[in-house]
Length: 229
Image 1: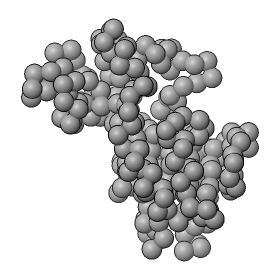
Image 2 (image 1 turned 180 degrees about the vertical axis):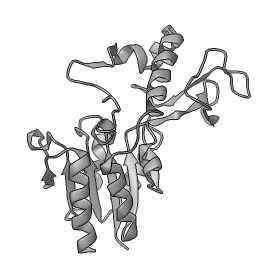
Image 3 (image 1 turned 90 degrees about the vertical axis):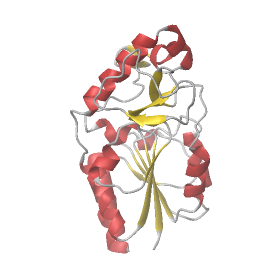
């Protein structure tokens, strides 16, 4: 069975109503990234950071997977499919994808500030100051902030290296180290890029460009790949 690796970014979830991480004005829901998505921000104003992610989490409970998420599940009928996502939402899982690796953490999880191996599912959408791990330390969002190591990048690289087909969805391929994954696809193996701005992107390797949003572009490609299997 051929292996397909999906690399998904913010555009994958945008059609579900999830705000993209960084818009053209450099703000995220009217916040500077430096004020809500760095460890310095956490040390400086943990309440602001908690409030920000609580609102993102609350929003997540109000949205659903879109046609793009749902189409990817169909690929599992005939392919060995692995999703590698930069997104922190759980829309791939809720759609039914069985293997999802989150590069930048998971919004519905929290972890200890003293021991990063202590990760918990958060009940509900709100994390508060005073919520502590079993070792007594404050819990923080289970998110990889700017400037922090990306612990799953080596596993993701391994998966991409083994892929027979790579599908990139809704990402600018500008944010490293995730953007570097595309360079690990074996030479000659097909790479598809689905993004409405794809025709403006520059790439050093040949890609099949589908300049459409995930909700329309992904179902079209999935039907093509299923017909070829």
